[in-house]
Image (tube, rainbow, N blue to C red; front, side, top):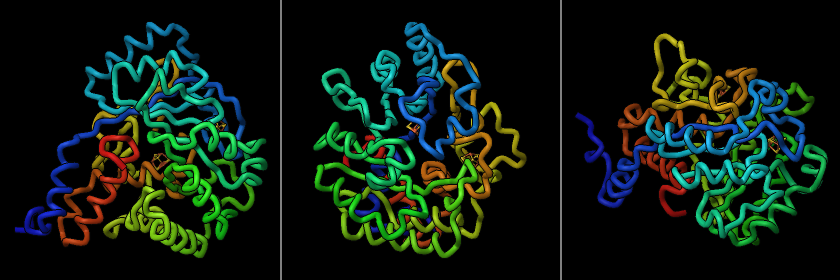
Length: 332
Ligand code: SF4
Ligand code: SF4
């Protein structure tokens, strides 16, 4: 019988043991329906998710809610929005109770005296010119200055087809600022011209991401296997999509048969009662979804399928480590 220990040598087995203890149980929370930007391609606004629920305004209700989430077994709160930093009191309600990750556009700096080790993920859409076009201003330069040298911050770089051949200077700027970067691909939720991926472009972006990982190993938090699965939409001969996606809210998950999924995962709206279908947009076409976290989780929940060859299992370990680093369960 093939077992984990039969496939791994000593150092790899130690790495496996370190992550297998983590038992991460995440859920996602809309902290607010408001944002200080309106980016082209933002699924939150384009799919009307900001209209689903009225924000809970009482911070005591947020605190009680987080306590209930903790009792539900959540050990990682992923804060999104809208822009969570518009409501630091709500962010604090999570941070004081649970390991917390805050997604932000980086315009408002999270005060480090209040949140010394909260992981911050800054959304990035491209170089300064691209950000001006898609987000209305050069958000990158501002966020880079706000977080320069911060050990608990990384950029979540959403690559669009227009960025092909232009990614390296961006990663270089991030490296120069002493920060990290993780990459995913834009899913075109708005049917905007030129933002869909052709097979050739997907092959090209995979090569580009592999090259960046090789050249900037201390800056890029990623893995070649993740690049392969994300760009191909395939894993172990299976195709990513609705029937395979692990990041579907438990209460809305009526799939039959049930795929392997994130245990008890829920994406909560800002009234703390309503839920959204999944970690991204309810109107998104699952067959073209390129959400990075959903693909990462897809790999992670399918450990058993990777206990096949040494290479398969090492690929799985690297992806799990990448996730654990991005959410501060293990150091960079
Ligand atoms: S900063 Fe984020 S939430 Fe705000 S509009 Fe842009 S993508 Fe949407
Ligand atoms: S849009 Fe993406 S994340 Fe959402 S259910 Fe579909 S495949 Fe999963």
